[in-house]
Image (cartoon, rainbow over all chains, first blue to last red; front, side, top):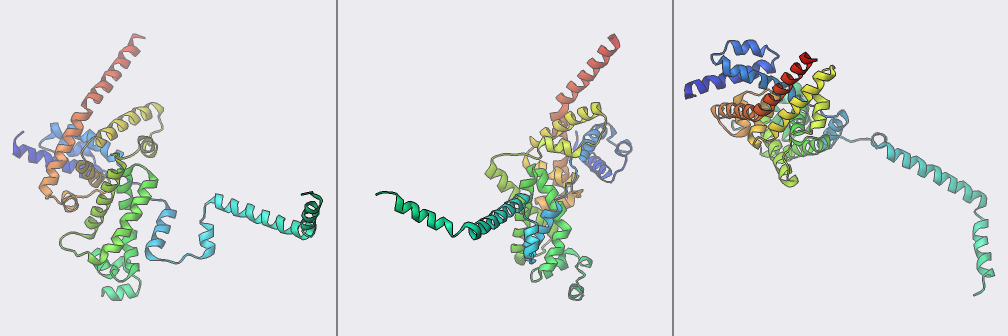
Length: 126
Length: 208
C-alpha cells in the first residue's frame, strides 16, 4: 500500500472508531470511505472492540472510602463500625454475649470457684 | 474569580487547570478532580489488570500519588488528564513487572460483564468470538493495548492519546492502523475456522 492510501486508510479507521464510539452506523461510514473495501473489513473488528471494551464503574463503597482517605474526611466511630465487614460484626456480638455470660456466672458462682481450687490444693498430697 | 467560586464551593464550575492550581493548597479542589476522573482511571486500570481487587488497589495508588505530586505539576502542554493517565500507566506497568504477567481482563469476568444477548446460541457464539478477540488483544505489545483502551474505553482522539503516550498525533494514527492490521491477521485463522464450522453445520442440517 502506498503512503498516500495508507494515510487515507488511517483516517477512515479513525472515522470508523469515532462513529462506533458515538453509536453511529459504522457500515454507512465505511460506505463513504475511499478505502471502503479495506475499511469495511475493519468495521467488524472495530465494532467488536467497541463492544468488548465497555467502561467499568468502581463500587460506590470503594469510591467513598478512597475519597475520605484522600481528603482526610473524618469518619465517625459509628460510621466506621457500620462499614466494617459482617464477620467483624458477628465476632463482636459473640464476644459481647460471651463476656456478659462470664460476668453473670462470676457474679452468681464467682465466690465458690476460688474456694474449690483452694480445697483441691489442700486435699492433694504432695 | 476561581477563588471566589472556590469560596462558594462551586468547584464544578472550574476547569481542570484552575482546579489543579487550587488543589495544591485546597484538598476540596482535589476532591473535585477525583470525582471527575475516578471512573475513567478505574475503568482503564480494571481493563489492564483484569480484576476488581487489583483495580481498586492500583486506582487508590494512582490518586494517592497524584495528590502527593500535584504540588510539582505544571501545565506545560500536558493536560491534567494526560498527567493522571501517565501515572496510571506507570503504576500498572510496575504492577505487571512485579506480577510477571500481562493480562487485560479475566475472560470469565469479561464475558459475564459484557454479553447482553439472551439467545443461548448467539451468546455462546459471541462468547467464543469475544474471548478470541480478548486473547488476541492480550498478545499485543503493551503500547498497543494502551492505545486500544484509550481509544475504545475513553473515546480519546489521536491527539489526546499522543499527549498521554508521548507520541505525535500522526504516530498514534499509524500505530492504530498497524494494531488493527495485526489484530485482523491474528484473528484470521479463528474466523476462517468459525466460518468452516458454520458451513459444516449448515450442510449437515441440509443432509438431515
